[in-house]
Length: 67
Image (tube, rainbow, N blue to C red; front, side, top):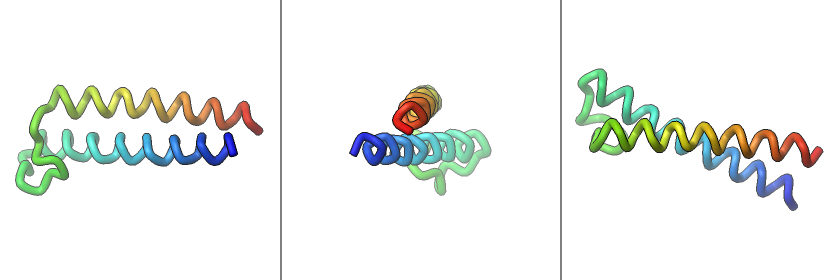
């Protein structure tokens, strides 16, 4: 069960990074109308992407220790 929770956390954090990363990139490229979150705030996008990457790292290292 702990392995499954680590994998779920890993997948969820990757989705957060992809979502907020795509929003930041599309917003900076001038495509605000097709950005996933409407490019509300660059600071918010970067903050959530960074914390998502931290969570990816923590989830991966915890999963590796479970093996």
